[in-house]
Image: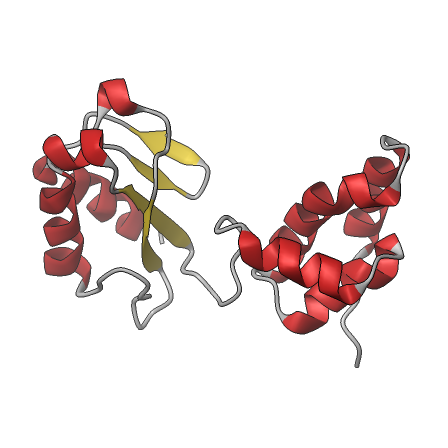
Length: 160
């Protein structure tokens, strides 16, 4: 069976495309829909977006692979994005990375065996004044310490 968008995603894509004078302008928002729909962007998903927007496959694939916010492989239910820029580094992001390794046994780019957590080191999340910062899925967590981050991980694990 070929990959296809569900009815809700189809409607959302129609709404997005309708907001722009050219289909190409809708590319990034539609890639977000595809990522949410399928969990990550396989080549087949990117080709589906290209077909839907009537764009060359190469345009969609190069756009999706350029931006790190688009996942090309599965990530855990809780995607931990650890800021590694100077402010966060100086305020203890290494301690947060050690905490993840100690609690979950994963390092940058890895996912736990149960698919609950993934760790990705990222560049500036733009919260330098409240460093160190971790983004969990779409939620920002500021002024973290190894203890407070460890508690956050425990709370997320308890939620399942």
